[in-house]
Every structure is written in structure tokens, then in C-alpha cells.
Length: 370
Ligand code: G6P
Image (cartoon, rainbow, N blue to C red; front, side, top):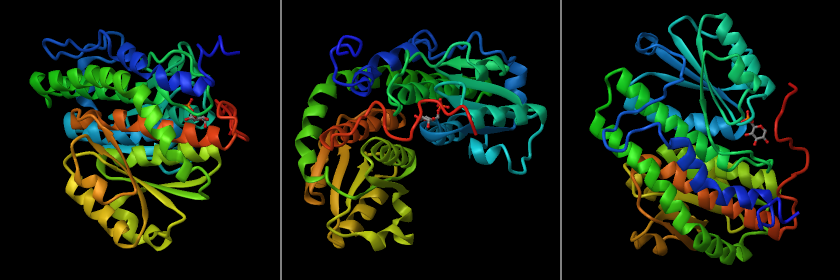
């Protein structure tokens, strides 16, 4: 009923709009917004254990795997520790180089995904410590871990994950700050900046959501009946391109691919024509110039471009068919912000195509069998 959906037409839309709260709840009390000190009191690891680890494996499936990919960038940059990201169904069967100095982190909305669970069981047997990042209190993965960080997104009903993902990103950035501090790699000043950026991005999302939805709804006439879609991004935006493509294929059944912008010339550039829209994430960040060169290569081949970039970047309009502007936030929280228009685009296109966005065919909310 409309009532259980809080007046929204679908759980997915309700959950998209709950993201500012989900992010805020996940961050609240875990970083001091005056000192920058991160605080994860019930984490379950001693300071010594956190200093002794020399590698991290991030293991997850689906949308949670995309959160892992973003976290790799953050952890390597701020906690200065090597990170490997694995799809759980690969991790559980491949030859692993794991010992007591490895921290394996599983990321799961449900805490019940069969492959991810099997992955941590195997890592644990090999001597790794296990940290679970999870949205469901008391789930199997939280019970089998040495430490837990809960995301506080609240129950997620829509099969396509939305608020759980941005809450996972928030928890992972917090953990990065926490680990960076414990390992003496991250200053309190930078920690404070990251903590404030997290809190700030929730407010920004809250402010822009209604107008962003309208803007995207007004664009989709030209795109909703496409057969194929390409999403591209570099750096922190690369996993968000993957997530955008996943969301679109899950709920609209349009074939969509996500790619690293710099990798276009090694394949997908051959596909460019007027029938395949390309959505490029081009925030004004440290790889901006490189991203723009990639977009110009598409433009030179008459590709159809939707750009999502930073407010005030007026050149974007000249090199695209459509542009969506987002407020400027700290570079490190761009992946959280840039997820929102990708979710809304999928939602608007899928509903326009008459798809059941909350219960897409063949998909399950939680995949508890192999
Ligand atoms: C299923 C869901 C996805 C989710 C994935 C991993 O495929 O449909 O939305 O990302 O499982 O689930 P988890 O609960 O482990 O995050």
C-alpha cells in the first residue's frame, strides 16, 4: 500500500529519499566533528591487531562489491594499506594467499549472501581476522565475524539496493578514517575534513533530491527506449559507473555496461553510435582533465552523451546532449553524491517502461543459495 511506502509509489523511491537519514545515522556518534577523532567502540579488534595487519581483502557481491571498490581507493590513500577487492563467488574458490596478518572485510546488506558467507568462513580458517559491514542486526555474517560495523540504513525492501549502498560507503569511509588514525597514517585535521564532508553530503543530498528527480524525469523521454547504455567514470567514479549500469539493467532490463573511462579505447569505443547513450560521471576532481579527454573522444565519434558534473562547469554543456549538475562537495564523498542521479535515472526509466521496480524479474533481495 501507499501507506507502508510512506506515500511514495515504490519502496525504491522511498529508500532513495531516505538516504540523507541513512548516511546521517551511519555516521552519527562515530566521528567527533570538533576533534576529528573516529570512534568505533564495539569494533572487536585491539589497537595492536589493527596495527599488525598488512593487507586487506574486501569481499562482497553485487552492489556491495561496488562499495568495496570505492573503499579500496580510500583505504589505500588514507590508511596506506594494500587492499584487494574480490567478488565473493571468485574469492571462495580461488587460491588465496591469506594468513594471520590479513583482515578480511565482508560487505553485505543482508549478512546472508551464500557466497560472501562462504568466503569469510574460508578466510577465517586460513587465519584471517574478519570484519563484517552489514545492515541487518544479528545476521549470520555478523555472528561469525570478529568485529562488526553496522550500517544504519533501516530495512531495505526494494530488491535493487539504494540506501544500503550509500550507507555502506559512509561506513567504509568512517572505517578508513578510524584505521588511518590507528595506524598513524592520517592526521586529525584531514580526518575532521572527511568527517565533516560525510555529514555535509547528507545535507546536500537532502536539499537536491526533489529538484534532481524532476530534472531527470524531464530528460528520460529521449532515453527510456534505448536498448543499450554505457556508464563511464574514472577514479572514485569508476565503481559508481558500474553501480549505475547495474541499477539500470536490474530494474529496466536495458542492457547496460559500466566501464572505466580510460579503458574505452580498448573496446567499447567500437560500439559508439546514436543508439547507445553514454552517461559519463565527470566531477571536477583530481582526474577531471583525463575524464574530459575521454568524453571528447566520444563526442568526436558523434556519441550521445549525458554528463553528470560539477555546478559551474559550463564547458560540460558544449560537449554533451544533456547535462546534470551537482553541487561541489569534498572529492572523497563524490561517489556518495554521484550515486543519487544514477539511481534516479534507473528508477525513472524503469517506471516509464512499466517495470516492477521493487520486484524485478529473476532477482532476489538476498541470494542465500549458491
Ligand atoms: C542481490 C541483491 C543485490 C545485492 C546483492 C548482495 O543480488 O539483489 O541488491 O547487492 O544480492 O547482497 P548483500 O545482502 O550481500 O549486500
